[in-house]
Length: 516
Image (tube, rainbow, N blue to C red):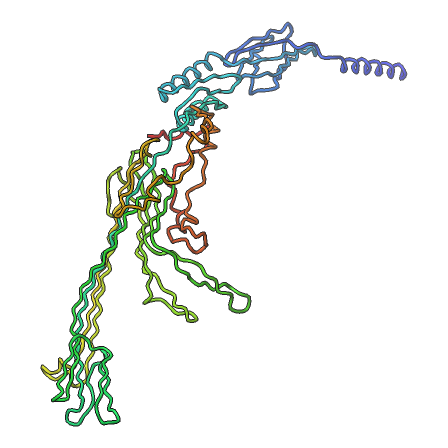
């Protein structure tokens, strides 16, 4: 009995194992459109439903023998139905995209492109969930705007061509430096000298102006030496009295004018210097002691640094740093016997915006100084009326003014073949120099130049790569290339020079601001 039960269990296990390794029946194809439904019928009652990808499709048992399949998104998935009695039904569900909705969205985007970019040749194609943009537009901003609109439909491939831009405008900046220095000097002083009056030799002075030197020779005669006779000298030999009087009034006017015309490209840096460089010793750091002294050169004179940028409004934005400096030996120092001058600097750093041809006075720097020196002989200077003879006075008035006027304008080069304006010399040049000056031989000697191919348009990514230039920098603009030749304007320029237009990077999710 036990052996019969074991053989029966073994036979049932073998049958179950054979059923487990049997291949699954072929799956049936079910095709449904996204947003629509399909009904599957079963001959036997359905006990359980399973679908592999709920995000692609969903299945519901709506009756004992009916299953509702709803398409949700384009894709494929598997559906299994368990029937009563253990049988299974397999289905391969394919969900197709809803072309009616997709086509409506594509048409909407095409209308939007025509509306936002009416004069541009932009084509939009949608294939395999990818948007392809093609055609030719006029600038980078338009191409990026078209890409931003198309990216709302899905992944976007930008195949647009961009017209090669015209040459950047060239800006000529005319700067007028007017530096007027006025000085007034009033000096009044008196030196009294006795050459033997009342058997007395001596002098009375305030010490501000040098007095004559009186000595008695071996023969008993008095000798008087004048180091500075001032401007009035009186002598009474019969009275043995002399007087030197300083009474001067000076007026001076010194005017320096500089009118540089500096040409620069849009957003680029231009620099101008009319002056020179003077040696300046610099002490280098050393280990444990004094380091070596090296010589560096500092610039002085009339300097101009500026960045001109054309705004979308058509105006010219100027960032200016004009400077006027001169050597000042009065406030210098002496180092190991070497007289090192200081610098008197008048500098302006400002930003203005002008239309072409307009002018603006961007700086009027005034420097007014009054220096008065009064010296007197104690006691004698307090005597009424006569006390003025024992006083000396010096008044120095300085009044300097710096005015800077800026005028930008657009310029173009002279056409090829047009004669260049000649210079007017006060005296004619020698015959050896008045002839044709040496120059590069023309095409008649060297042959025609190679043909330069001009492209009307290029791919967007190529144009963006060509437009990527480093930001403006004035390092080395002074011409000497030394570390300490940069001015404060040059050192601070990277933090304040954002005005140069650069090509923006291509994005898919942000719509760029339209130019103009």
